[in-house]
Each structure stands twice: as C-alpha cells, then as structure tokens.
Image (cartoon, rainbow, N blue to C red):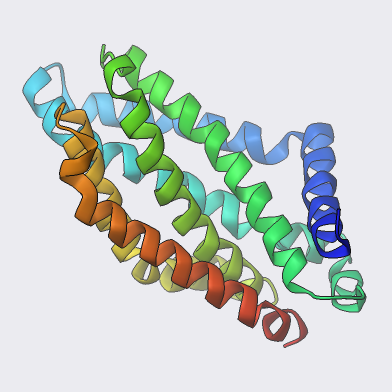
Length: 226
C-alpha cells in the first residue's frame, strides 16, 4: 500500500472510529430520515399514483437533505476538537485527506440511502426488488457527485462564521446537474425501463463526478491552508 493510499485510509479509519464511539452523526441522520418519511407520507396521502409520480424526486430530496447535515459536519469536527492545525501540518500530499474524508462521507450516505429506501418500501408499500441493480448504479454515481462537492465545500466553509448559512447556499447550485441527472435516471429505472434508456443521464453523472473529483483533489490543499 502506497503512502498516499495509507494516508487516505487512516483518515477514513479515524472517522469511522470516532463515529462508532459517538454515533452522533448517524443517529441524527437516521432520526432526520424517519422524520422526512412522516412528512412525505402526510403530504402525499394514500393515493398510489401520486406517490409513484413523486417517488424519484422524494428519494433524492431525502438524500440531499441528509447530505447537507452529513457534509456540513465533515470538517467541523476537526475545528471543534482543535485538530485543524494537525491536518494542515500533515506531511505529504494533502489531497489524500480530501479523498479520505470523501470516502467517509460516501460510506455515511450509503448507510442513510439504504435506510431511506427501506423506509420508503415500508411506509409506501413499494417493492424495490426488481429495480435494485439499476437503482444501485444510479445511487452510486449520484452519491459520489454529491459527496465530492459536499466534502470540498465542507472544508471551504468550516472556518467561516456563517458556515451554517453559506454551506447550503454554495452547495445546492453546484449540485444541480447531479440532482437533475440522478432524478431523471431514477425515474427511468423505477418506471421499469432498461438502464440503457437512461444512458445520457448516466454519462452526465459520470462526467460531473469526474469534474468534481478532479477539482476537489487539485484545490483541497489551497482550501486547507487558506
């Protein structure tokens, strides 16, 4: 294992251990997900056609709202525990820290998405089983795009006074292409159509993921030391 990969893995492992001990973020996200489901069910009512029409948008609305909570705390924990200077003084390529934090955010989002999809299945009596392969592909690409931007902006706003306000203001416009492509591709998958019919949206997602990832890797050191 190269020093770069080992450095990124140490960041991921540190965050996993911290979350396992406190369970602060996951508990808050799971409670928030449950609350969202109650609100959605109350707003949509029992009419099945309305639920199926709104389902792709509701799924991604739940994911992005949960992501706002998760990504915003990515580097806030380092600030609260006076560990920011330690990150800045870490020897070697700082982009490994970004990739480690990004991997941690992707893991958290996967847990939240699995729970949200399971709750949607229970609350709205929807069988996702026939759609799981296609849905998993869309979720993987969409989650990587959201987490790439969210991790970078989490670092940008961590040192700002009005970070709770600025973080969603910066993040939401930047992830519009990812959300648009994710919702459209999810709509195609949940309609029972072949994944190939959503190829244009999947290509847009893959391109957005690549751009966001490269920008994050190239700019993170300046953000960290800024």
